[in-house]
Image (cartoon, rainbow, N blue to C red; front, side, top):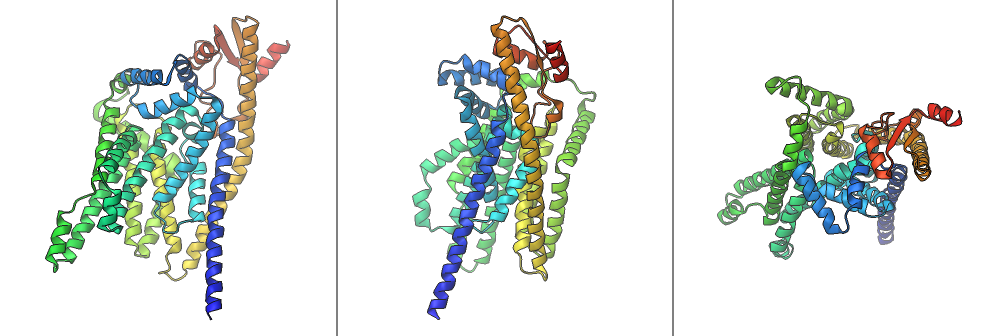
Length: 493
């Protein structure tokens, strides 16, 4: 009997080891997949403008001075733009590798925030990966393009890490003894969380604001639960009084204060106000202008998040049938964060779809966590059908990802080849002393959602702003771009 028990225990342990190995294998393969796409993404648009500034810097300190100047004259996102300057200061491969790691870290933090109890849940990790690859807003601009990645992917990484740490402080405070809490909670931790809160709040206006909402709601839930516990222990006046007097952990509150401070410093930047004054006037002002912006945001939500919102609605219904109140609460929290960070953009006159990147991450976390809880709930008859449906959804997404990756990865490599060849041609013509250089455009047949070249391509006008970036970066008076076939005919003619 003892031998059978030990054999069963060994099989269970081997199963956990295999799942752990598979978990880390998924992370490794995910790194390689996104690294290939990073490798085939060339410098684009604003990358050239920032690179020219960075080339003028003789030291790291000078990069901080440049960023201070931008804070005062153009943009308040100093943390993420400083990260961009650092990478442009380093050799190009450093960003390719680091950005691939950042993508994996973001996916792992999203996995953690789904609050799945299982330590190595391969289904959830794969769903997060598929959600990012297939449903992240403008993947080419928010994950692969260097300027956009530093603004959105790296900003999201810092924000999600801060959210995870803050949540961990609340969970630790609930589950540890007072002696252990004193060991890990103290002035040093409070100072560190304050500083980290400033950094997370100084990343991205609407996503950092969503982070602040998240922390405030978690704190309110914590106080509510403590109040309920206090009332339930009304018979023990000493314990009840102690619970009533006990507030949120100092480190947690310090993090919130830092987040508020960082967000305020970013939003109130002189450069941000000056940049807003340059924005084009809308057709409608006042209340009508506000309604117009709300309509635009709603249309973007419909275009980018219609499928995910439908999935969220189905999940809410199923969770209600399962009477899983806690899971409903978690999903509603992330739906609220999604709506708040999306419609906060109505305060700006001009909004790019990539500004919804953080909102999309909140929605993905909520939906994936809800689906997993539905799959693992055994309270309903036929729960195996829900598990089978979850596995089927994952299988369909993996198949879709495979075909997408092969097709668009090939197109990315072709775009990289076109861009590499024309840069070599620019350098060649520059050495010959050419004053006016005509280059081919990237083949339009290669355009795809994982390359931003379509939105950031040069034109046949040497005075076009992107053409000017190329001219100044490569040190030539004039560059114009024409369709490849026309360029080939002109060159051979």
